[in-house]
Image 1 (tube, one colour):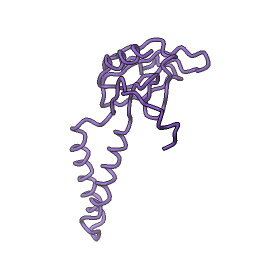
Image 2 (tube, one colour; image 1 turned 90 degrees about the vertical axis):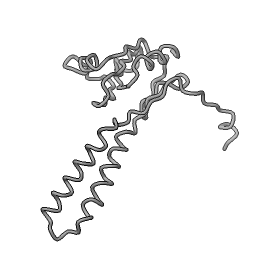
Image 3 (cartoon, rainbow, N blue to C red; image 1 turned 90 degrees about the horizontal axis):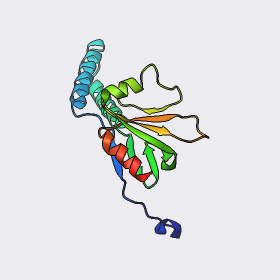
Image 4 (cartoon, helix red, strand yellow; image 1 turned 120 degrees about the horizontal axis):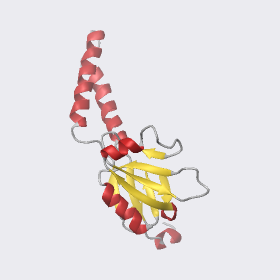
Length: 158
C-alpha cells in the first residue's frame, strides 16, 4: 500500500446493484444444457456418457455467471455501469422507466448514439439525460430493478 492510497477513502455507494439473472433462468438453462448433452450422446454413441455433461454444464454455469457480472453503482460523484464511468456533473436529468417505458425508449425512435446497458430479464430502467457539449452521447439507458431509487441517488448526488 502506498502512502497516497492509504489517505484515499472511498465513500459508501449511494446506490449499488448487480444485474444478475433471475432465479428461474438457472434451472431452465441447466435443463436445456442437459437435453443438449443427451442429444450429443445420441449423435456419438461411443462417447463416454459423462463427457458432454462435464463440458456443457460448466460452460453454461460460467456463461450465466458472466452474464450476471454487470454492476450498477453511484459512488462519490460518479455513475458506474460495469466499466463505464459518468461524472455526475454531466447529468442533466434522470427518468425512471417502467418496462413499457423502457421498451418505448429502446424502440424505433431511439438515438443511435445512446449508451445502452439493457438486460431483457429486468423490466424497468433509468434514462439519464446528459449535458456534455464534448460528448455526442445524448443519454444513457440502464436496466435496473429499482429505477426510482437509482434516479433518486443520481439526482441527489448531482
